[in-house]
Length: 155
View 1 (cartoon, rainbow, N blue to C red):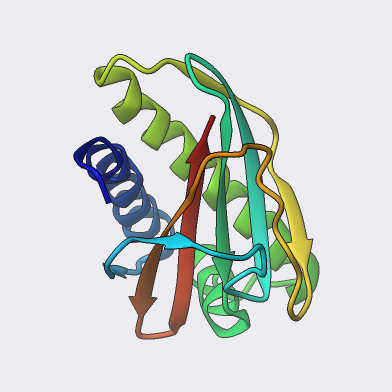
View 2 (view 1 turned 45 degrees about the vertical axis):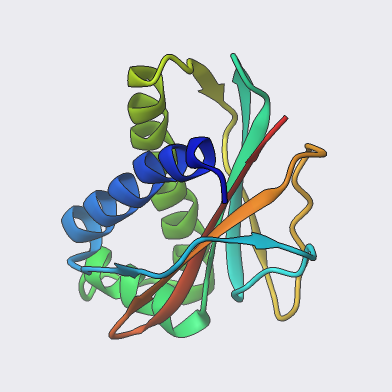
């Protein structure tokens, strides 16, 4: 992984740790970033946000079912109405917040981007199609409640 990619990964790692610790009381541990070779999602529920501006690309976050449920319970407490719908909403909201904070970090590096509304995909072995030809960088995270993966790519 070249230095620019490693530098670009930092705002995503920082945003992910900050959003999940404040919103879902989780302290995710980042693993080693890698270049993803296929489009199969790493988890059971994912959200994808398109990015436009200085660079075009996308960010996605895929959560294991167990991790998504823990996030919903930590965010909503006992107010969970419909775990599937609540998980979709929570994953979309978390991804939106991480995207916003990561974009703020990227703007400090001179990259200004706007984001679309998150699209949430649910189900075993679903695929994520990033809208660029560039390499997809994946950052695995682990929590006591399971794993999730943040992916991003730019044109």
